[in-house]
Image 1 (cartoon, rainbow, N blue to C red):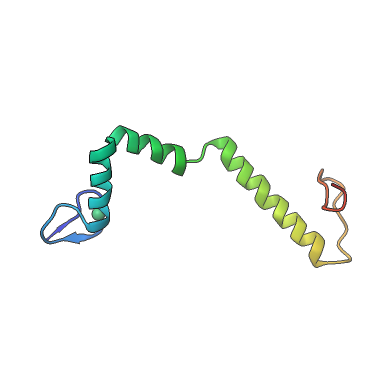
Image 2: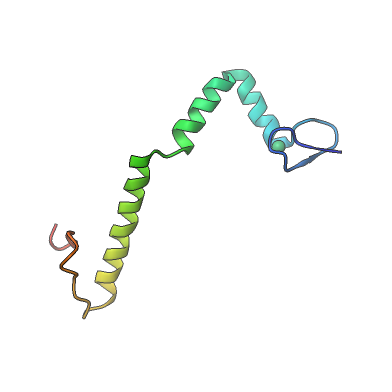
Length: 87
Ligand SMILES: [Zn+2]
């Protein structure tokens, strides 16, 4: 009884890899591990600009919720943004 050598989480009785990691291993055997690494880095890892897009989008969503939720809410004069009506 050993842990999977790739994920190190699942217990394996017969093989060195758990079922999910066996699939990953087979894909790596077909396409090459460098290609797999490049795809994972490109798809799963966000760079600074991409993270900033997400932050900006979350802030914009939060501001829109504030605008919708309270009729008495006064728009802060220190922020530079446009509501849906102003766009
Ligand atoms: Zn595994």
